[in-house]
Length: 271
DNA sequence: AAAATCCTCAACCGCAATGTT
DNA sequence: AAACATTGCGGTTGAGGATTT
Image (tube, rainbow, N blue to C red; front, top):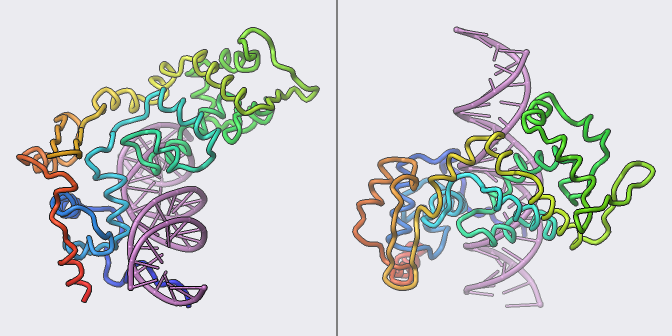
């Protein structure tokens, strides 16, 4: 027998979430907690499948989400973790409280891969790629950015870095550089990161990361150990004013453990 | 100013892993 | 142990905004 679909999709809404839907979901979860995603939309009055609700909550509505662009330190860490773990985004995300696997995956695919390409590094193994291939693969925009960043000097630095930062690495007749040991590779990459001024790069490359970073640090802290307390940084939490106000006006929020169990309701609903 | 193209990221899909009966 | 339900994960898509032509 084949697997049953996770939910009956007939009549369910898809696509971007509306403010009202967000309200309903946040309100329901903050008041009741999460016991079973499948029944959350039904009890919250949403025409969504549980999977969609879960994703929306985890990737966007969770109070402990860290918002804003990635810092250069975070990027460095992502690159290092990716070298060790590969595309195991949830594992990588576990090292970044408040960041989601989806967010990191997107950032990797849209920014970091390109950045490594600029540097002449293969994003999969951080090994230098051939100069010719690297040049050929640039599109016009890449070239523009490359010029703006003025990092041709930096690319040269990559080539000449050794473990002690003083010697040239061995080059083959094809002008490739090989690193054998992955730990050594990571050490070299860390050195590279410290050599390059990525902060400057980022601020030139995209003003989003720097401008949003300045207001996004730990906008919300959720103490879920006892009687919960949520402090909200007014500058950056929810983007929707109404939702922001709604959260802001809450006098107190119960801890997850203190939520009234819905087991009875759910089992009743299931019958 | 308009059209074309590019880029980002929220959301979806299918599958695997895990839990429950 | 088997069947089924639910959750979690990673790959992919596509809408919409930004940029270029």
